[in-house]
Length: 179
Ligand code: IMP
Image (cartoon, rainbow, N blue to C red; front, side, top):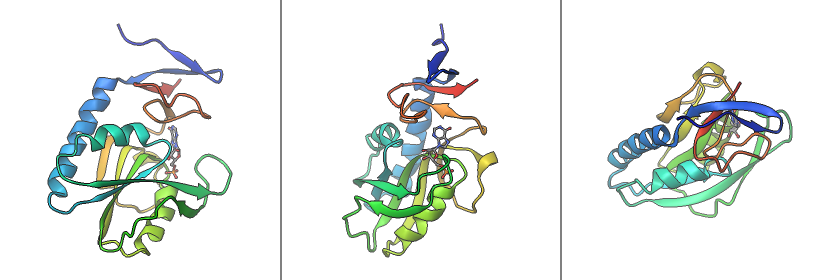
C-alpha cells in the first residue's frame, strides 16, 4: 500500500520517490564518491538548508576519510530560482589546495551553482565538483558540469527529504511531486 496524497499550503502532492528508492540512489552515489576521492580527503561543502537530509545519508556512507562543512548562500529575495548569490556564509575553513565537493539538494536552473562556483574557485581549491540529490536537466539554463547526480527528475516541483514548499515538507522521508 503506497503512501497517500498529501496537502501542503493547500497544494496537492502525490507520492513520487520512496525512502527506499532514495536510499538506493544515495548509496550508489556514495560508492562513486568513495572510489573517486580515495586518498584525497575531500571537503564536503553542504549547502543548507535543503541538503541536510541528503548530506547526512550520503556522508555516513562515505568509506573514505573526509571533512564536512555547512554553508549558506545569501541571495537577493525574488522568485524561487532568480536570486543572485552575494556571499557564502559559514565557510571559515581554508580551502586552498583542497578537493571540494558541493552538496546540494537540487540543481534546477543551475543559477545558484553558477554563481557559487566562481566564489569557491576564487579561494584556490585543488578541485570543485557538485554532488546533488536531484537535477532537472530540462530546466538547466547554465553550462555547469554536474558530475555527481543521485537522480535526474522532470521539470516538476518536488517536496520532502529536505526539500520544502514554502517552508514545509522538509521532514518527510519520501519525496512527493505537485499534481
Ligand atoms: P537553481 O538556482 O535554479 O538551480 O535552484 C536551486 C534551488 O531552488 C534549490 O536549492 C531549491 O532551494 C530550489 N528548488 C528548485 N526546484 C525545487 C523543487 O522542485 N522543490 C523544492 N525546491 C526547489
